[in-house]
Image (cartoon, rainbow, N blue to C red; front, side, top):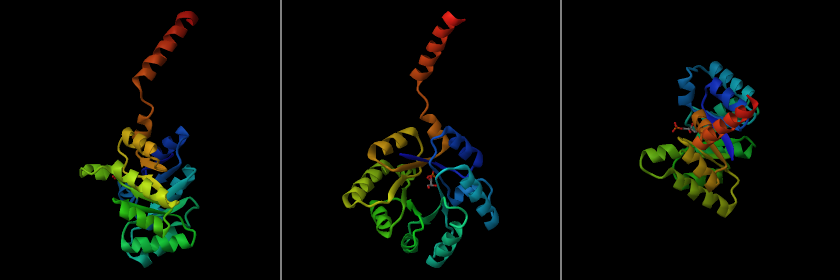
Length: 218
Ligand code: E4P
């Protein structure tokens, strides 16, 4: 399972990268705004800074919502670095843009996916990744993990190569369940990756080992 970090914060990206288990980064316009990044030049420089840290794919989202605009932006975004994957919203022109890019060998991440039908469309258009937002579904009392299961089944039925990128991951159980179901990728905050480390028996076990060692070694 690939681990992507869902942030535009360079320190968090560095920390996750230094852990040695980071496979990529996802960003979105809200995450870029949270870092105070504005203006095309700064946005492009920031994406480049992210690409320079990570070994893996970096999703950069288009702002345009019309086909011509998404194509123009996507074609510019991929000039930043080979790691850039064009992130495109699940709308009618978005599907056309995904097909356009897929036909030209440009990788895409279809974002804001909330149903199996949307995921099927994204795969048919040739998306590299599909991003179902499981946390946001849970927020409205729909089971986000159930959607991941549905998409896994559909993609396996037809051997679609589109990778399921479980997004809006909020806690470790989301991540573990996604791994059980067979999501190809999860994207979440650094805190979720770090929380995987925790177990009280690890802490007490280590404390006992060190105490016993000290007894005979001083
Ligand atoms: C996915 O690529 C999105 O950036 C993200 O996972 C959204 O997560 P949120 O629901 O926590 O904002």
